[in-house]
Image 1 (cartoon, rainbow, N blue to C red):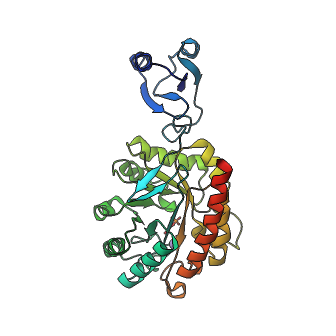
Image 2: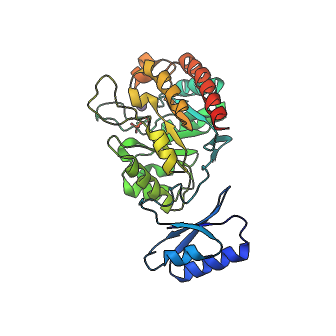
Image 3: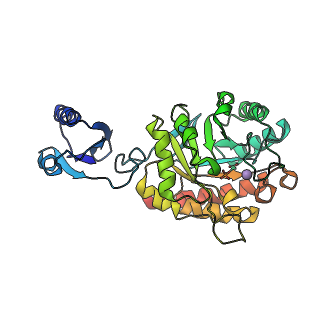
Length: 337
Ligand code: PEP
Ligand code: MN
């Protein structure tokens, strides 16, 4: 349930109401938005008399929340969440491009790509160290050594880094990682999600291959319920009957999620399409639809990549993509103003 207060309510009046609500046995979450103060009520609200609360002089409106997610819900938190990572910002009008190879292969590779994507305007470096591969015989990533090389690339480029965790036993290697990625295959690994709630680091949460947007939001809720409000959602394509693309990129997820949550939303056109030449048009579509950013696979030599070469851009193609995406981001900003 949410209680929306009128404008210019005195602090003592708000506090009195909060104490009274807490005495009724519910937990209160206060959000001071740009327009209104909102009191979110979590717990058993069945004993509360909505009409009585509505009738209070300081109350503008009271609404029951139908959705099962509370922390992620925009009703509780009307302003966009802005997440700041090592100088990079995402959300609330800040567009962030994350780029880098599917997997970290060598020191030269990751540093070369890091410097190139930074020069093209990326604000964060990606690179897999622990790789979820369909075949147990495919390259599984360099593991802890991959993270060490990513940290070297961070030192060389100044870019914060994001990499995927597949199992809790790997968390000990993530001290110098800025953002932890939960991949599509682990979106509903609830024990992993609960632990992400205690890391104190931003989490990049990718949509599962056949998950609904509500399921994605419920997974974000697992992380947030543990006390970590810094979740970035990522649409990366879902399974459909289509075979000309690797997945079907659901661009409509952006406006749908924007209405329901205050969390930043990015798009992954690399895994979403699986084909390098479709990455730029879908990146432009994402920016036009109001995404807060992109995550794009870039390799210095896609033909020789150990993982996902066909969908990887060269640094030069990425630079050109950024020029066009920037123009669209400007247009979208102008439309909002
Ligand atoms: C990735 O980003 O490297 C990855 C494996 O993506 P996904 O979990 O979306 O398949
Ligand atoms: Mn990949």
